[in-house]
Image (cartoon, rainbow, N blue to C red; front, side):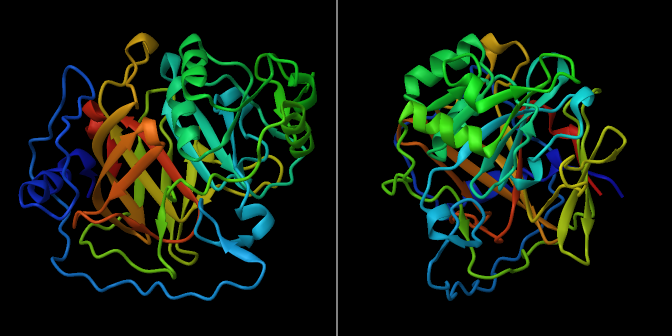
Length: 364
């Protein structure tokens, strides 16, 4: 039976009232002038006591734990800054190229009901990634959380302001390094025909003389368990549908044999054009944000905000809360017990979704 996700979030409000151990703050967080609070009864029940996840793991010599996936990667990869690439997601340019090499995919609305994606890449070798499109200010803010170099073919005026405000390193198709980082596929129609390559991205980074070492003063964006585990929850998730708009309504189905979620959109499998393989994710996070609007002058600000959402992995879902502070580049997710969310190692998909449209998120 379909279960509308907006019905789960009362759990979080109850936990907050009972003081679940989450840190307190004296500063009131204001996200927008208006807020929407769910008023329906919950459909997710979690155990009061859960088994402690064993985090002991042996990391092979010459490897480190990836900040983006929790998997073991070579030191020369795991100690470097990732790249945040803006990816077009309109039907005309699907399937995208190189998208499956992203460790994390963020998706959010832009104008006209379409969505845009931002992929976080750390270990990639493609000579064709894209198509690459322009950035938006909320994607720039998210990239900064990860100490990433922002790669876009230009950006909106508000994003230009945000990049300057954050001092964010950017590789842009509209600047001097553009012809090095990007190339046009003349068989496709502009503006959807700009692509990037790993070689071009690395050369562009050299031209701009960006530091490529990860800033170790930052806390890890995610907290990963040492080994795979199952969430303690009564909410099964065999299918997740996300109706961004009538134009873009992707969904995910659970592959029990491989314990991952496979993505579908535009009436079929969402694949990588370079490999022909379907996109799949170990983790899914839906992050509800207040004040989201397709009118960018009203779009939510991530400067200092908090909200709710849910985390899905291994066919189970739990409610989460999140806190964001742009000043120290932090974004922390908390589980239903009020402690920092612990995630399964693997790739993650994150939907940044309007909080006042929770009924458009459907679990089956």
